[in-house]
Image (cartoon, rainbow, N blue to C red):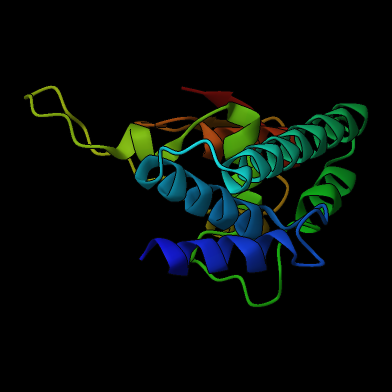
Length: 177
């Protein structure tokens, strides 16, 4: 099993598109594989050091992309079409509403949320299950509703606020949590 994970890490680490701006899914898969390998292998080998360096490089790349994208969005805040084009570059044609997309991961990074830890069930009565609304679904809703102008969007049970974030940014409507 460890050998299989090691091979996957090697392939992903050498993937020519690993550090491309929109490849959050590829980097997430690599980071997950590295974490599995690290938890199963406690030695201080050369490979462990190389994986730590690769993990740092990928994490720094994600942070750099998020920072740059946030800056572009802030500078374009008055122009919803420009904001939309900035976000759409993280969607691929094959993205669909049933799969996690690069845009979903970008937004998670912007919100600094580890969605899996938030989803992890708590064993008490106060637990409310969280499922993030996929970005593609929210973008379709925005397209369907059109320009909302000064209308108010109230999202009851807004979770982490992804839907409100998109609506506020792309329609200039007012949002309430």
